[in-house]
Length: 80
Image (cartoon, rainbow, N blue to C red):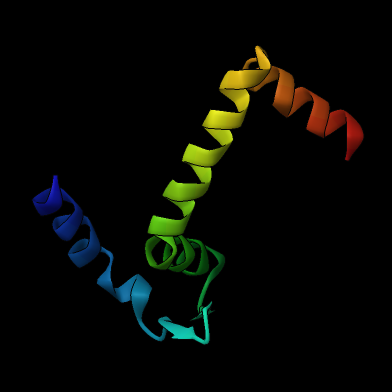
């Protein structure tokens, strides 16, 4: 798995040019630049651990509610 991830990062290394991640007093600061595709790739790559943690937290909350993902998505769409 790690080898696959490393290969993916190397294949898209040009998409990471100019992107940085820094921890400052408990805050995660990222600098993203480039095309919309590059910015999305940079954000997903640099923030992957936090995205994974957030997804796990959402799944825990959803599991206790008895409602499926479609209900949450449709309700959010209706409200916002």
